[in-house]
Length: 468
Image 1 (cartoon, helix red, strand yellow):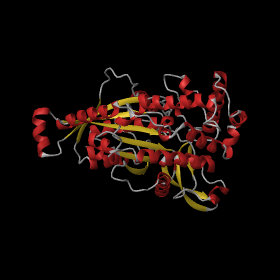
Image 2 (image 1 turned 90 degrees about the horizontal axis):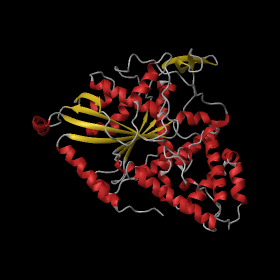
Image 3 (image 1 turned 90 degrees about the vertical axis):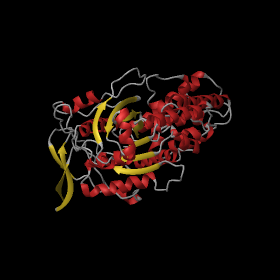
Image 4 (image 1 turned 180 degrees about the horizontal axis):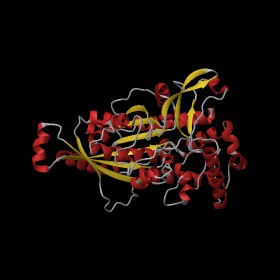
């Protein structure tokens, strides 16, 4: 059962008071967390966000929708120098150097929490703000960016599950379709265990190793994303600890082994609350969730359905994440932006369909008065194609043109049709979608003039425009 931390309400109240105090003197702080289902392009997204915000602060029109939402008040932007933070720093400079190389390279993935702060200097919004600026100086909003592994996001739906409920749901997924083959060794192991299996350490370690191998096969070979617990795939800098050594059991309520695994399951969730969800997640004001919906289409029906199931679970958890006390203290996620990435891999006429598909997957239930507001977007954090026309079976079709990463040569690609909503079964009967990998555009210098993108400004306007 979920545990309750008595300190959380007190800490929330103190954090809310601190936020209010900073706002009164024109020194607001906005915490924007960025995550995504694995391989959705978080590092690329953050690199582009940083470069384009800095360029906008120098007067370049790199983010017109955000500029409009801010009323043209942005005057400067700078990276806040590091001080004594314990959390690793997002290395935007290294990622920009990769994009400026010859040939340009996509930035390396990050595997841990990382943060970066950008100070935005803005003109006052009101007469009161102008008067305050005479004494306190220009209004400044510090945008605190936090990047965390997408695997950890999938632990969010686990927080309200008992070990027995989690075991039943996880095994039901593993026994479906292609997962059953990928998890064959693990399923054979747990199905052979008696209901009264003893709490032997060697048995628990063997089961966890087989379960982790099954998760890795589902991710790396099949393209699946709904894989829990997240730290089994990405343990973070602390490495593997005994509280990770649990796995689902068919008989989750009986026997000494089940009791041991249930204790570890509970300890894992308590640790995630204490080390991530309470100190970090509850402090987010806004959340961006990146989804490679096109990659899921390319991976086939089962991978797509798995992504849809993961996204629906995450969306439900995020949308219902606020309570009355959160509203009073100003803590908790208030806005969530879901973004289908790599929108430049399809021609412009298809992007509305991509937007509709993501909206269908996330769900369009109206937010209640205590729920976080959600929006959906189709973006390319770094645009690496242009629209073009190809010929398919003697007729012209909308296509995209770019440099293929594997050959370095210009290629004109007709990716296929993107459905407006979750595809019908007949959609999967024939080859339907090509997902090429394009080379990023080479940046001039250090990216001081910004990075070409699609829709990044609209996403940022939806997430933080009201605070600027």
